[in-house]
Length: 269
Ligand SMILES: [Zn+2]
Image (cartoon, rainbow, N blue to C red; front, side, top):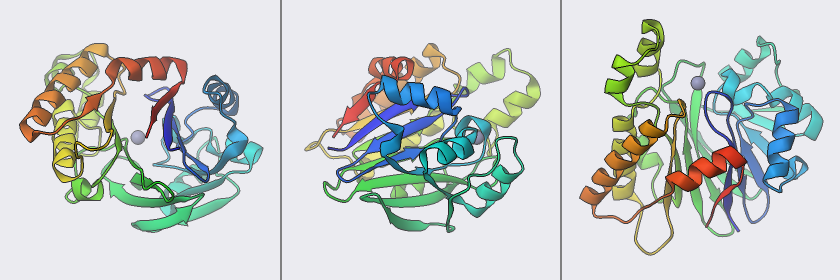
């Protein structure tokens, strides 16, 4: 069984549990250990069963719990060298048991083949992941904070069964919204976060490249701002793009919201 559980998503913290046939991985630990433990419990899962922690980058909402969680549950942390260095100067500290990811490539971990690729973001060295369950071949792509879609990312995300994709903001709503100008510039900049338009373009490109009509698929839109309207706008634009692609895709926005609120299991493939 290959399952993906959103333990948390957004600026308040991120953690994604991926269970495979032979083990479990956690992507990001953006909560303290008490909150993480509660969210594992709500999902009827045990942190002790996690074999390793993958970090996308060092920002607090992705990594603030990494050191303490690894100390408590004996996880090994896999992240880029720059991410490890950045964590060492943060208040939460650097995890004790670390393994450094190279510039790109793949590794075998807890029954998964883990592929990683760089993402443009205002962090030291942000990464996207594709996790393939070695036993079943099921593949999940995870693209969180990214300022724009770099060349080659759609090809990196080929043949996915599930894509977790940040869809952060509507460009017009951000421009006209109440946020301070520096924050608007950061979010909408090339090293900030994906707009709904950019995310829908990437999802459409992935649909062209990998998704077929013979298997269950899903695309999960992740909204940092937690604005339902933005999410609905994202879905509408994405559905339009996918209709152009002529591909079938199951969108689960309401279920996603429930999962985010309740920490429930998101999808079984
Ligand atoms: Zn970030």
